Length: 293
Image (cartoon, rainbow, N blue to C red; front, side, top):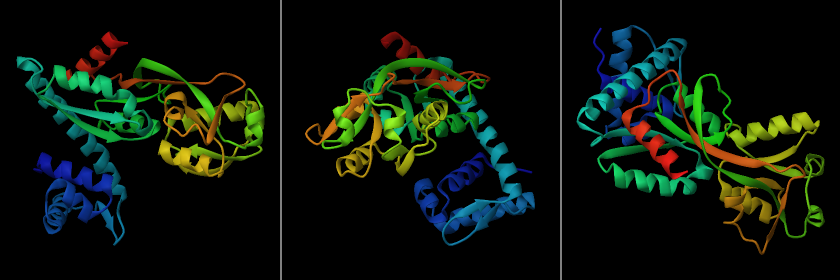
């Protein structure tokens, strides 16, 4: 059996995107070329890997098994390439970096310094929620990731804290809770709540804290975009809890921010798999972050 690395890469990209046309565009292939490549792969394995429809592709049981193995093979291939490239110093290579959407602007200074220090290293950035970053690391499709701490998979992932920021309740100007100096979970339960997508670390943190408080939030909307969360609060569609750097970007003439009864903090950091060695580029980013903190 001889399956080219390129075929594995294209298969994984197709599954991630879920559509032949869009995947072909991102892979700089024609759609028929990608279709024939996957068809040849299935013929080689004598297994149907994908369920095809007009809307999306889904993995069969055989596809799930193959996908897991292909992810590991591509991850190992990537690590080998980076180790070889590093033999003469970190002059080239690729860094597969995960970033949570809300913290992208907070990482710019570090990433700018990294690019200046290692101009030959190409950054491949993928946006995920916190839990999505963890899953991508465990699948070996990322080298390292920025996310909120603590992580869910603490036994499999290592973390290096970077910076902590207060979390504030975000309220419309005329909201009844603006008369309070501090807000409790019981207060928030009385009003529609605008929450992050389920794969965000903060969503999991709030779920744990409300359970401990014996409170059920009235979740009205979910989003992964901080500006959309803020806009919904401005329009009176609910209340939200946002990190202070995000609050500072919103319209203070239309919003009021209050701390929680018990102070909450958004701790961001870098995470990576603890049972795999860091690639040279990931190690360089981690070292740079520690020197700057």
